[in-house]
Amino acid sequence: MRLALDRRLFYLRAPGKGGSKVNGRRSPELRLRRGVDGPELDRAPVTHPATTEDAAEVRPRRRLLITLPRPGWRHLPYAILAFAVVVGGLLRTYRINAVGFNTDEAVYAGQAASIANDTDLIPYFPIFRAHPLLFQSMLSVPYQLGTSDVIGRLFVAAIGVATIVMLYKVGSLLYGPLAGAIAALIIALMPYHVVVSRQVLLDGPETFWATVTLFTLAKFAATRRLAWLYGTGAALGLTVLSKETAILFVAAVYAFLALTPEIAVKIRHAVIALGVMTLVILPFPLSVMIAGSSETGGNFLAWQLFRRPNHEWTFYPTVVPGAMGYLVVIAAIAGLWFLRGRRSWRETLLLCWIAVPVIFFQLWPVKGFQYLLPVAPAVALLAARPLAAVVSSQWELRVAARRFAAPTIGLGLVALVALSLLVPSAQRVQPSQSDTFLAGSGGVPGGREAGRWIGANIPEGSQLMTVGPSMANILQFYGHRRAFGLSVSPNPLHRNPVYTPLVNPDLSIRYNDLQYVVWDAFSADRSPFFERRLMRYVERYHGRAIHTQTVNSGGTLKPVIRIYEVRP
Image (cartoon, rainbow, N blue to C red):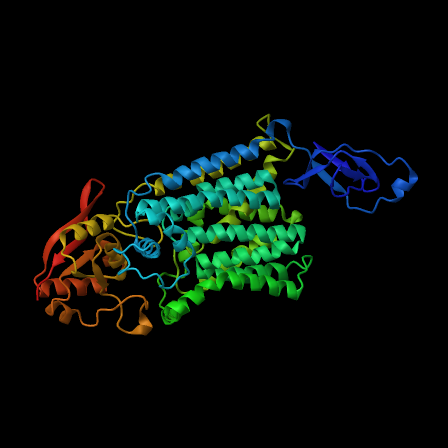
């Protein structure tokens, strides 16, 4: 049902104490709630102008179209949101600790343990490495009770569920509660977000704070209140403190404001917002300088900017759309096309939020599976917009002499999109037993077990050599023994500065500084050259296999990690 209010008859003033004024007269309070097609009127007793003077006070206004909610569907958004939170929480916690940490998880959890003063891990994971420490500092609070991989992952999963609720708030603000609930459902079931928010990585918390920033910026655009602009600066600062690459969203905010002239921001107000962001970020560089680790951070930045590509340029176009869901991407594009007549600053905001990181990471040679996760909420909102529009429409479709109402079709489309996300997400959360590994896509099978075997069976003070630093980090976290990656270059221009290279492995073995060599299938698949070099050391120094870690792959036990004892 639609109610058209003629601009010549009605002038609605903002609600205040004691009700609102309609044409200059008091009436019961009016509550306007933004819906898919515009504001929705929950309760609006309307009186006509009583006198000519009252009618003369009416200001020219555009024709306002108000969509009344369907009586039986008033609680539909809340039902969808509850389903999203429950199922999203289950997907993020189901057998969450079946497989041990990957290398990045080991590093971030190790930093959090060091902040919590875990004496077993402090020698292997210094607090200051390369990234900001907001998430690690938050994780160090539960780590005061003891370091555990399952606690770290549950902590990240809780942040992932909070992102679902936060996205509902953003969607409700932009397009109404129904669109917000559908967007929350999409992100709750999206394999991309499910997989990453099950791991102790920085990208899940970064995505949460990026969604908070999106909310504050949208609130500023809707209300023009400067407090929300300054809040955007603070939220953006927290996003950067989660992961430094979030500084790209400064460019996204600038692009949005530049492309939306109706949202005028004075230079001094923009400077104040940037100042607020700087104040929030400032504690991290100051603490790095005080700790004397600023050189390492600078070297890490230079290494990241000039390191060799780790994937083909087609990596993101071929991997990320499938992880987000092809139907989600199609719905987002279809909404931009079929609802192009309803374009506003909202779509400009979401497109800028997506375009800036996508362009940067596509041009940047370093490509990680999880790097584009902060744009996933914006994609979910663009996909939810047309789905919510169909659900709230009034038209009917006749197929084979039967009539189908638009809400029924819309809910069917929502269910289809949800099912297309739920099935791959359910498959991805099953424990992996593969001997290949994509960074950021999950844990490393066998790594935790091999590390714990090392901690229980190899003498304290022993040192190990691995193919690369990835396995070295995992073994150090679980085994509490020093490990060095053979692939770490002695040239400081060609290595991650936080790792120590083995300048002369032969000499280290002959002097009995290295007693064990560890081969793993994951590093061998990525670095066959260094895998061959490592096995030459095993042969040269009479390596004896003392432990083999296997996984059950299709009913066959496959070795994924093998530990050799070598002698000078």
